[in-house]
Image 1 (cartoon, helix red, strand yellow):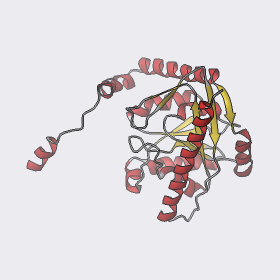
Image 2: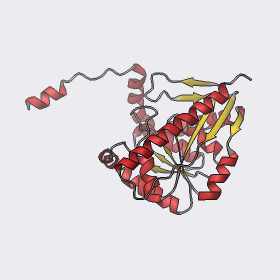
Image 3: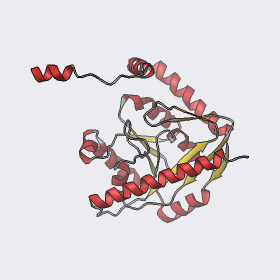
Length: 257
């Protein structure tokens, strides 16, 4: 009992007023179909505006053709903060399935992505295997593997929600290992953007009326018999490739006209 009291009195990390407000209103929003529908419609319209008004100055179509002609499908991934623009740069119908976290915060994300024409799989994964199992990642990985067997490319965000930004998790590596399908690192950037500096992932809100770039990296293949050491090496390779492509995309859109 004493231990329980001591634990309950442990000082908690202070939370900003914006986050406290969001936590207070997110449950009513999730329960209100009307409010959720209005938000989804508004955000979807906004992302479409961003896509239509940003001139795409770089799109690696030849790279996409080579990948699809060679493999037929792929596991496409990027860092948090870019996923809403991915449906607009999908190529030859790939990808068409997205993995979205099961958290309440991600409920609207899932509905927006579905409205853009994607199928969704609700699951989350962590860097440690046990943590992945706790979050239902195993079930999500199996669902994604089944979609890949159907010839569909899938999309997964590489970094773990509320973890370390630009640190790839093992979820993407795991689905590649069990499916035999390569991972394709991608990056989207726009010249006009707002960075949420206090967000855990330094999320970026792309703004309209600028320039945009979509860069596609080389395939990363994970052996089916990969051990823990190999999995970690591939995780690091993916992390480096994603950072390189994102830096490349920013350099393109931020270059003097």
